[in-house]
Length: 198
Image (tube, rainbow, N blue to C red; front, side, top):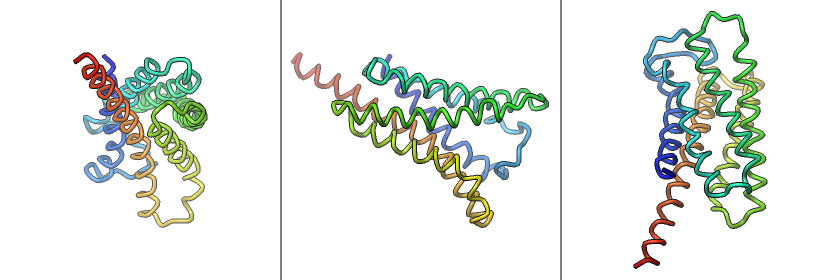
């Protein structure tokens, strides 16, 4: 069960990371311009953050109370991101400001959750150090994403577009990395258990 959950996190992170690049290169969309659903990937992208709950589950099983606070915040962040993408596609004419309610809050929660996770991992040296580095990467990438609107005037449109795509890809790939590290931990524990048993 833990291995499956970790694999789901890897898949969700990769899909989350590749979606903005796919939109730009394959569909030819401009970022931050808003659009109606026109591609099959639009209808399922709300599920990509939900798949990353697999990583939250494995972290909870492996480390429990040590990471509880950050895992709750990160869970809320994933849920808000998923809700935003769902309503963006399935209720495009709604007058409810879903971007402000869910995208903004989801990004802010992701930033705070990554910071809290960093602090918790730093104080628990027994936990795999790669998770600390990934939490730090998540914090930095999310922080840059938050301040990116203020950097728009500093770059040409093509450069700013690539910067924004890279940051959005980075968030997804960090989640994929977390799933990958957890998979290695799961399999290494299984291997150690088999070695001891034999």
